[in-house]
Length: 304
Image 1 (cartoon, helix red, strand yellow):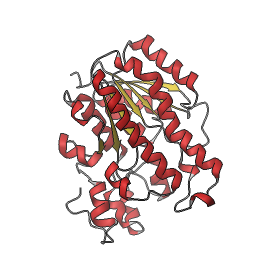
Image 2 (image 1 turned 30 degrees about the vertical axis):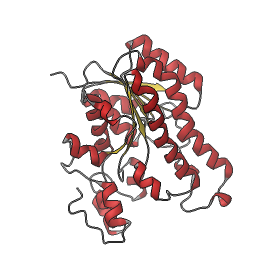
Image 3 (image 1 turned 180 degrees about the vertical axis):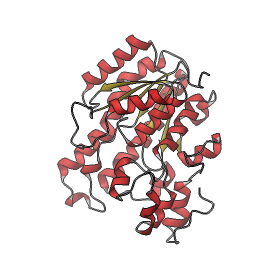
Image 4 (image 1 turned 60 degrees about the vertical axis):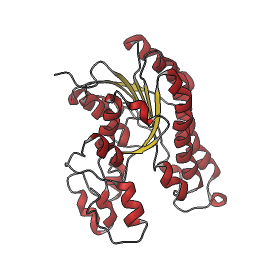
């Protein structure tokens, strides 16, 4: 049976691991052809030096029911992005969905370290990878996306506009990067809306990414073992949850109602009726405000 995204073409920029991988796989499960990009391949690892690769993601997309196509791309290099989009145009003739999920900043910030004590090169590198990459990718991809009515751009970030407006996020450069991506979605909404396309910002909650699981020395199978040390981790979600959010948005004929908006996986789960892989619906950002940030004991009752 064809999926709701059968015949659609997506580009997930930054799909090696984490949210990008989860999004790519769920788009594949909905029947899409998904181009997955990143710098970690089976032949060459990025400075992350981790086992996940774009080829691995592409295989998962295909196994899920879509068509996964891995294209090694450094999104800081305009010529590489231009070549990527030219390939999509040549092979598919269209681009229906662009997911800007490039990040690459885990090694370039320290928690609660003020600007004047931050390594300046690291901070500026974080901004280049988290912000400049999105601008470069949209610059080259949007003409192709606009060639077919109803295109969608999803800017992936950390935190909703409302939460980030009132909350200091980690460090100066981290905070600036996430706010910038939120504003990108707002600005693109103004530019794309009158031209028949939609742009929005989307955040997962506390993500059980491969790197987060490793940090807590657990796996997806036994992730709850981490709750003894980090009780609020109980609100966490898999990368496939936000993936299902993107798939639901891409299949929504009325997706333009979200143009320029800031959205979360938990919010959209209630709107579209999907769940995480365990059948739950974590609402992490409401939990953060009402439980964790409020200093209350960890209790996810009513939040997932």
